[in-house]
Amino acid sequence: MPVHKGLGSGNRPEWCDVTSAGIFKVPRDGRFDRHYHDFEEYWLIFKGRAKVMSEDQEYIVGKGDIVCTAAGDEHDVIEIYEDLEAFYFEGPCPPGGRGGHLHKNSEMAKGHVVPGVEG
Image (tube, rainbow, N blue to C red):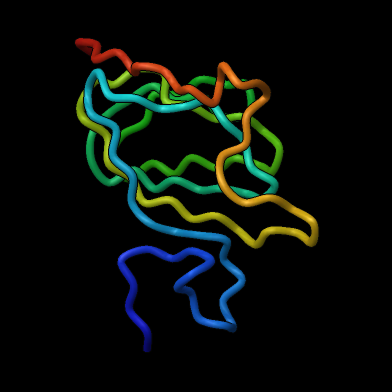
């Protein structure tokens, strides 16, 4: 059984149709970018608390929550209450689909500071 720190196009087994998977962290006053994908993405929050946006809705998330975002829908981290750590899983990329973070414009691609907020 292969073991990986994260999965992506350069290190996943041939039989695996996952676009990518791994861990991301957003500290208080860290950076993130509002983006979308050509495939579904899931976040399992395992540490911290934050306000996130997915599919035009805002949610307060914490340990044990799963954020599900459909292909083509923007998602973002809006505020951090406690440093956030999460496992992400990106579903199969459809034929002709693009990998990575996609943005509506070049300004969105620059990302933004995610304010640390008492909450």
